[in-house]
Image (cartoon, rainbow, N blue to C red; front, side):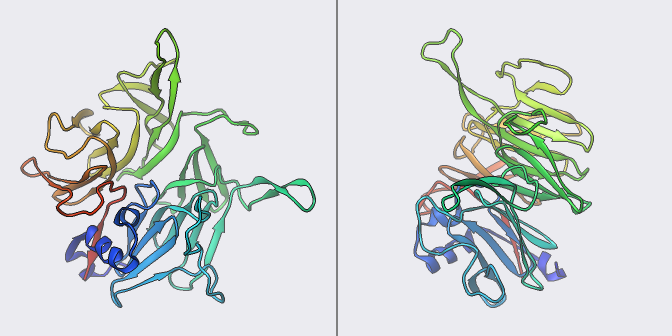
Length: 362
């Protein structure tokens, strides 16, 4: 799918976002930051895919045209209705291109779209729905997908597809789904192995799955008013076992060799990006970077760096730079000379940027 020309020039995503802004005449922030997902944009050598609250939009770089992906070859309607509804009935949160294109939706599971044949396959986890006609609960869905809210998608080296959801992680293989729970909700019999919503997911060069987690709750203890605690952190799966990393301030109930306190700046993890031997972790309090080889942590905040904001929403890794989306614009970190460049209201008409990425063009 990738041609040699595909790698000759790299263009930052907001060039496409500006084009889409002019095309759609809606809020710029809604286009570059559909929903709240940090994985709502992905690319091939020819197409840009953008998941939004209103549908899946594609930009054909060859014809320079925007289109919506059809739900069926013989129908003109799209996966998502284009008109606005509240709450949005067809929101998409994640896109992943890997031979075929995968989309994660809000409450409707996952879709696989074949660029060659136009085939669209829907994966919807089993769930109960009340039938007004029969006055009974009926089971819907076609697979054991853990949850139908898909926040992030990755594909491993064996072409297994991993879905990050609010209830945990589902691994889709040719034999079905294997689930790893983050919440022990009935009727699940399996015990939860981590806590919090799975907000983001990446895979490193070794094939390890990295998860970001977050969940707010209040701990009463002796505090008045009650102290707000974030249950979350970072979890890593090496194919056999899970290791969970937490910020130092987190009070672990049952610490062991699999639950480790670290220099992670916050347990409210919103996005991840893998840069060779380093994992960049975006949180509500800044960025933490974990060097896997040296097993060391460092952090970037507005107090110790030139980053534009501590509220991180999305990360994109380039050869020489790291692009960082925040609630106040975009920061660009130059790795070679440890320099920062910020893009705020002088560039963007709306500053709360929630999804960012690199796009290769011919």
